[in-house]
Length: 239
Image (cartoon, rainbow, N blue to C red; front, side):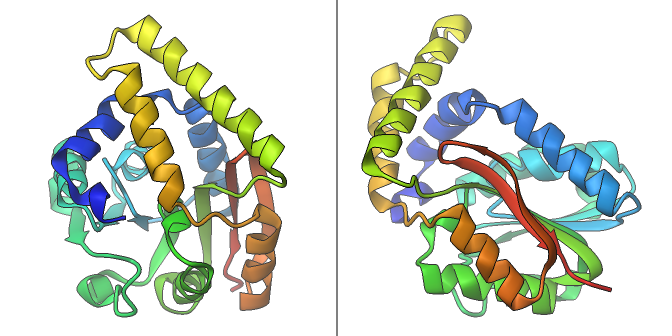
């Protein structure tokens, strides 16, 4: 995961991969619909593993008076998130922090608890025991009672053949995006980084992760969206 700290890889992701992820707009729409149903009056949120801040900025755009906390272990990503959320600078906090560290909440403890936690393609880089610890921390220390956690995440395919279908599907979408948008990043670079990233991913089945959330105490747990390895799942911290 160390290579995600580099400027070049961050630029490749932001300019090429992030914008071309299949169903990106639908996933964000689903996130908003779920939040508006379960917690329409939220005033605070944490964007965990925020990358360029796209999820958090979406929440700020829909709830301009809310306060947001953005956490990522990559300084280039935090720099991009700050730039994207510049108009909300008086109500946002940014922290460079590796969520794999057991004390990852120390830097943002004064901003907690919050009403909403969102995470986009971040937690799957952690070992399963770390995933479960992070979910427990979110439940015990981050969310207010009644708060919601939604994880837009890459999950494990059921079989190698299904994984192969996903890989082909994903790269086809990247090629379509490259052709339609004439981006500066070459498809070869995107493909190289895609497979390099897959080598360090530690994916877990969405069913197993939903079970972990239930065991921790989350209610209303569900997989709200799934297309191959792309998913949205989460739950509510009971009142």
